[in-house]
Image (cartoon, rainbow, N blue to C red):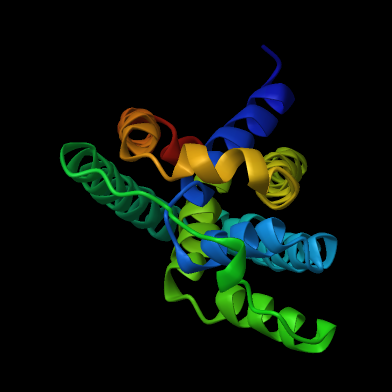
Length: 213
């Protein structure tokens, strides 16, 4: 498979694994979808926020990291450790699965401005989003040359777009599914395996390929 397709695929895969979770932002999008209130706007605001942070991570941080081999190696190891932590959390949730239970009545009924403000707050006031989109995606993107980093970022943004619009407009169908702990046991198990594989790939790259950058 050509490296440019690999960059898109890895961005899509990692982006999907990081965004699929039981969290306040996803619950908000699901609630608005169930209430059928400003769904397109909410999904678009969340996507735009993710796209901005992903671009900063893959473009800005990725470029900075490639300028110094020592920093690049350190960040690769740090990213690998963090992905192991994410994997451990996922496997812990497999043992004790939770569920994302929401109803249309919980939606924040209000003006468009208030709904947008809520979406922005849930996007940018979550500290984990910066760790995921800027640090982790940035460290993985640093393995690619500038052109392929853009493709990696495109793949990650594509994952966010698919997730948010599917969650918002498919809320009626997805809510019962996400309300089952068994669903999240399967999702978290898959994410855990994926995070282990990505962590191993970062370690391998840090050991064998960093010096050639």
